[in-house]
Length: 158
Length: 158
Length: 92
Length: 92
Image 1 (cartoon, chains in turn brown, purple, blue, orange):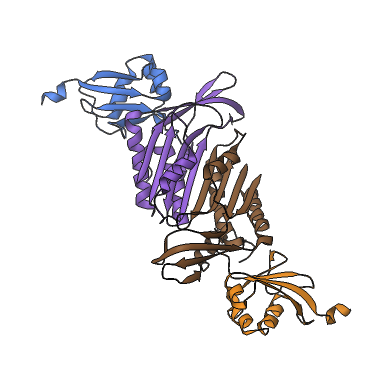
Image 2 (cartoon, rainbow over the protein chains, first blue to last red):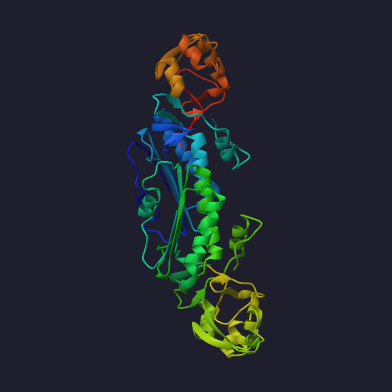
């Protein structure tokens, strides 16, 4: 029941949620999270963010995250869409959404999906600053903690 | 920065999120939750759900929930829309959304908004069953616990 | 003060199953001077009709707002107040 | 077995700043027989060029996948494997 996509194009949040709930009336709650490109980081102005990934591995890693969410929470379906390529401030990067008969499961699964996606799917972000510099975003310890906080067993790796 | 509405008409999730983020590039995450009418409850088939509210009080109560979220989480804005009247299974009931530079704040604020809205805004649901019976939905202790779990101080009342 | 001896005119609203049991969604009442707070108002309203008595039969299932603010049983009620009674809210 | 004496042909992929330091996004290498696992492969790759040495200079910042699965330093590598090296992931 999971929709998984990696794409350069933007996504339509409303259309993706509509697709997730289409034709069913056993859903009580829809949780979603969208990550977007901020225009600054550490006080420096960001002109663009470039997303690189490992094509042969990405979709499988995302499927595992979705399967793990489906095994942990009573959800009826979920959607994970991640963009790659060069994105400008304000643009969407990622969408996760989960539907369930119950609000708590939908919200918890949504948080789980983004926490695990961040630490177990092979994407890398590079920021381009207004001063011409570029830098790969460093993984943050708090992201790792957020992901492993869901369980004794941390995500697969990285 | 809060958008608050009570309406009989449906809402467009994508359009509401677009309005919430319009014109800003300092957002890093958008959390949202949509509550929908389920087609069954306690094993009984539901034909419709009727939402009643206390018009003179509702918007003010919703504003307080939004203000409380804005004081607790570093969010840049939020949206709360609640429908009233007769709704069919699969229809949207409520939308809450919150935007923040940080994903955790957006997700936490979203959960907070729906938890508090459920226990502190004057709405009441009546379910109409397939067998002709009707019943007012009873408040659930777990909703009260979810709301008061955010704090030593429980929501205003109810 | 003459206030304490004058009946207080209150606007009472009922929602959800309280409205159904009372039979009206709102009414203006002249509460006697001994009604000072929400609890006293409930006690007095109970005697107005069997419907009122039914509505307030399980007091722990009744919530109140005075002038659109949630109010506890010991919250004061004064002439001109809008007092609403309803079950625990179930929106969202 | 002759296997243990034959160089193992591996497909190596690099991502993000490892790719930039090595200078290529992928390469086919013939690893010597003493390379049995990821840690051994890293040690051997380091000697291929200054770029490789730079890419693997801070080993705790390097993650690995063998045949598209995250792999620890002691994970075995075998002829024909696709071995990817990259920094900790930062998607989402």
